[in-house]
Amino acid sequence: MAVPDRNPAALLFENDTKKLLIDAGDGVSRSLAGAGITASSLAAVALTHTHADHAGGLFWLLQQMKLESRRLPLTLLLPEEAAAGLDAVNSWFHLDPARWSFPLKIKTFTENTIIETAGFSLRALTSDHIREGASWSFILQAGTKRVIYTGDIHSLDHLLRASEKSELLISECTHVTPEQITVFARKAGIQKVILTHIPPELMNFIPDIGGTFVCAREQETIEV
Ligand SMILES: [Zn+2]
Image 1 (cartoon, rainbow, N blue to C red):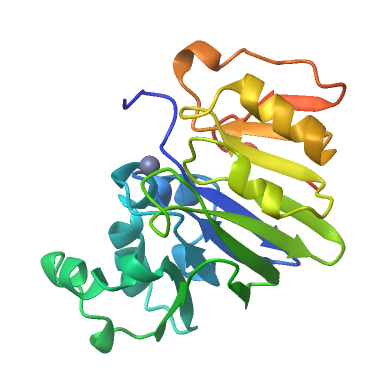
Image 2 (image 1 turned 30 degrees about the horizontal axis):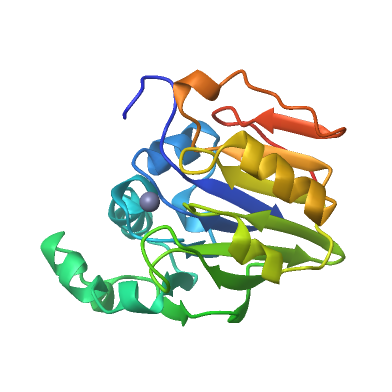
């Protein structure tokens, strides 16, 4: 449900000034503007899936880039089946990438695809949120640091396939419980967990896993 003080899913990852946005929920353009970040400074945008709370702000964001007369190419990372519908939605919004001042490069991913973009190596793992192949989580690597980001999920089983050690787990907690996340974090040896996609009743829930386990706040910045 929409609430006055929090936007739906949109997380900005930055490595050495290169910017990667994962998910583009409604309000993302306004949030970026509020943080003093132009839409055109994003090197890449990746969607975990196309539910409106993760993708509803994408087309207004693309329109910002058009209005800013962006020149640098933009990489848009999409699940393979979502890419198939992009032209129709662009057309519905009267957006014509062929006429834009910047090239839009579409890259699609399937299970275990590794994409190098915006200073990150991104590995895609499908989850059971909608059905296999329709919703995804990512393992992000920059240098020796690794972060796991879940899209929407109903279990964390798919993440067990990513067995290497990660510094941070960023997990949604609307479709999985903090207890499930805690069990996974313990099993994977992850000390720091940040909860996103938080239902109001969990905003102040902080389980004890012997590390840091926090609820993300709007516009919060975290260094790994
Ligand atoms: Zn969803």
